[in-house]
Image 1 (cartoon, rainbow, N blue to C red):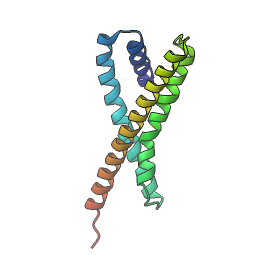
Image 2 (image 1 turned 45 degrees about the vertical axis):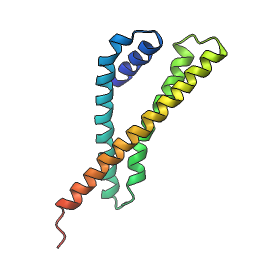
Image 3 (image 1 turned 120 degrees about the vertical axis):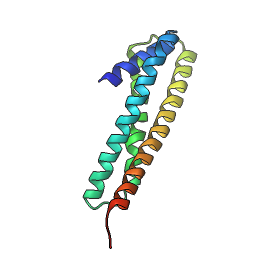
Image 4 (image 1 turned 90 degrees about the horizontal axis):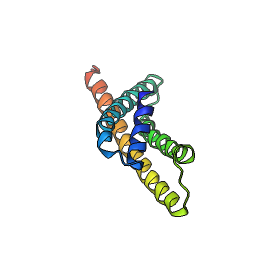
Length: 131
């Protein structure tokens, strides 16, 4: 729940020109999101491996990539309810920035998710004793 409030503060800070107060919230939000994405990815990977599904990499990537999808949906919701965008060009510029931001968040958190799952699987296989 705190991530939602921090994302809301960051988005409203950017579009309402409260740039200086946004940096600490952005730092906290980024770190919390990275840690939670890594933990959820490791959990999903563990459950896949426990059920005998050894094709874990795409699911691990999509755990992080869906955070980008959620970010894009949240940006659309913010445009519809929070901001009073009236002109066509302001709407287009906002949605292009939202699309670029959501794509960046999805790709980067997908890679964080995939790398954390890969480290986890590598750790598991190195610690297993197969003689």
